[in-house]
Structures are given as structure tokens and as C-alpha cells.
Length: 143
Image (cartoon, rainbow, N blue to C red):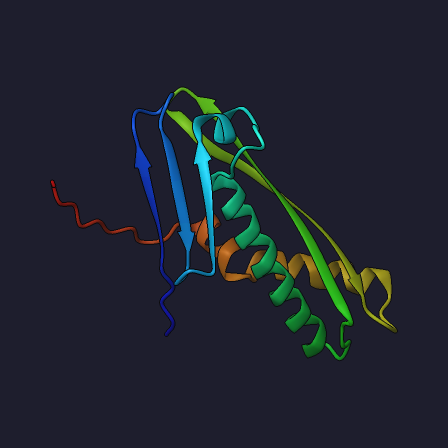
């Protein structure tokens, strides 16, 4: 089992506040705000961008592994992910994630490439977590 840690701090209210997210033990740090999250402002990132990045990375690894397991050693797999957040009757939700991938895989036919890509999409751990849900627990303290 492997456990991974990240953190975030938010200061102020939703509309005017600002925050910082930290990935891992100092691997990456970025600012975020209501504008960067809901208006597409480029002055920071968003939780949805980080979910998209995690999904793109997880899928790329799973797809590369599945290709290798099927006897097709990939030279590279590049994946882009777009996470869409929309306001519904019960508030904001991530309503879809679209993956776009390109692979350099010598000797594979297009149909087999597409079949393995679809299997990787269904079976990467991030896809499973988003599709099936994961147990979320909380410890809260008032300062």
C-alpha cells in the first residue's frame, strides 16, 4: 500500500479569497482563486486542473503498462485531460472528464490500440475512484 499526501490553505471568503495548494512533500505548489476555478483565469490553478492532471498521468501509466502486457512496447504515451465543472441544482460538480491520448507504439494496429486505450481508461486507479467513488473520511479541528 502507498499513501500520498497533499495540502491546501484558503484565506478569506469564496469570492475574494485566495489559496495555495501543495502537492506531495514540496514537489509542486500553486495558487488558486475563485477566478482561476470558475472563470478560467490564468492567474492560478484549480482543484479540477489537478484532478485532470492526476487522471492524465494515471491513464498514461496504465495505458503504457497495458500496451506492454499485450506485447507492444510503447515509446511514448501523451495524454491531455479536460475536467468540466458545472453548477447544478445541488451546487457545483465535476460533470465530465475528457481524455485525449497519443501513443507512439511500433507495430500495433489501430483497432488494438483503441481497444487497449479503452480498457486502460476503465481500469486506471483514478478512473476507478472517480467512477465508483472512494471512502472519504474527515478529522476537523477548530483553531
